[in-house]
Length: 504
Image (cartoon, rainbow, N blue to C red; front, side, top):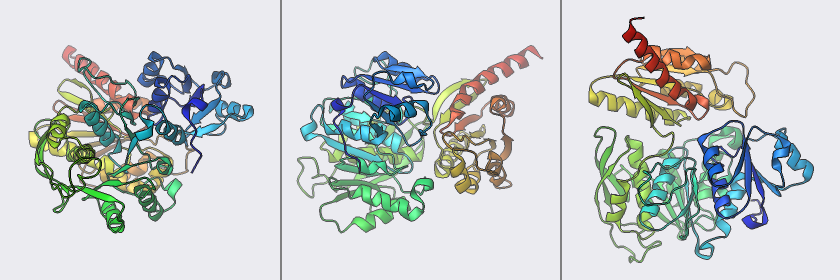
């Protein structure tokens, strides 16, 4: 484990790839701490503009001179040693901190640091939304938590609550809610008191090597030296296996959530009106003595919940967030009511536009399980409406992940009516011979989705607009630059509708 410095000892600090989902929130909290922050990213974004609004010098493109008078540099595992800013940092002998170390440093000091309670939310899938839901609950309930999320909470401007336009916020309460990224093992850095595991589904095998190592990483996370409460899925096989291995640890209180009979917080009576969710949480009260003034063995209060976001996996995310908030001492009735106000997060089935009867959504799903869950849930919603089709636009992310899971990616598109598969977004990786999006397209089971392989990024929007028709739901899927395709699809649909009206 790396040595964790105090944030004030680092500044001025420069973030390489400051606009990334794992970086912008950390940079925001550093700036809100009064530390001079600068950074760069390869392209402009809403994140960069929001950071500039709070006084961060955010550059587009990477160049050595942009380090300015920085005394420390923060980078993620994705930054290569030949990045010009990394080269300059090494030349100057500046400390280069991994993103996770910078985040851990924020938990070490600051407002309420003497009694700070770190809530780390991990899992292969669902951690961003669960972190956002937990931060939303604690904020709404008046706890004013600090948080760092790999996404942005949407809130109306007049809701009377302070919210960042990035994934970070420095609160004055004792709670610090973090999305704990397992991809490179750095989630083991955090002084976690409340650990949440949404699921354990092997991924990032370039780092972990084997599924067994991946699962062992989650066990180390859940049994860290400061962890006293584990909130864990009762449905996911990987999470269930984790729970079974930890049941005999006396110092660890475990609260399970899910649809499974015997879950400590059980989901029942689900329905999905329009693009929302309705369900009941049956709370048996396990773990209510942790972090609250309720006596050991007291029972929780069961009741109904309505969410403004759809799909069954968001119901699971909400149950996890409810478990955290109630086990920290918040009133169950108020927690359930606060869940109804959760507005969603950036790039999690985000509506980009609706034109000519076609709705276009953008989603961050990039693992086969996530893609499959999103496409299946959209198909179920379409089937309930009795009209329209699901048009899934999927961009495989990383050559290594595509190499490891191309068959599973193909299977994940089975529920779609139409599947448009793009070529691989390699990001930090060099191409691997023979690994392209065509592998995924050819792996979609025969007789399911109608498949189109579109390797030309610039042609994708027009291809989708040609395929989509009124009543359809289009979903762009992936964590690469596929997100930029969604608004282009909307524009192409508008253009195609105009052409049709003119009879051209």
